[in-house]
Image (cartoon, rainbow, N blue to C red; front, side, top):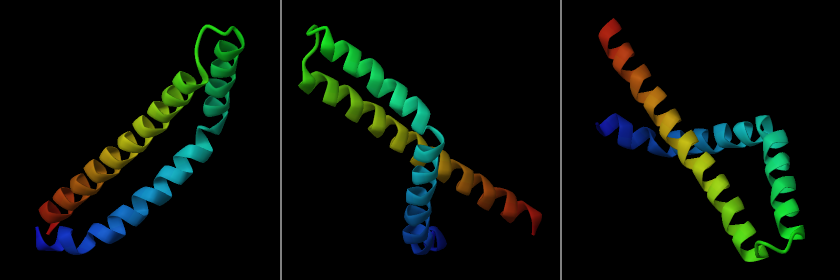
Length: 85
């Protein structure tokens, strides 16, 4: 457990790097989402504030998924590594 606390800054940095890479890989989907949100805005059936909130939820969800997935993968790697010894 002490080792994980020591590694935490490196893990957080790597999560940021992985998150950036995921954003690059999903940029086309993000642009599609923005296009759909702009279509909603143009119909005057939804406010710009609500559109911004939807966009923020999408980005936040992506960041949470990356963080949890990376940490789960790291923990799995540590577990497998401990069994190999």
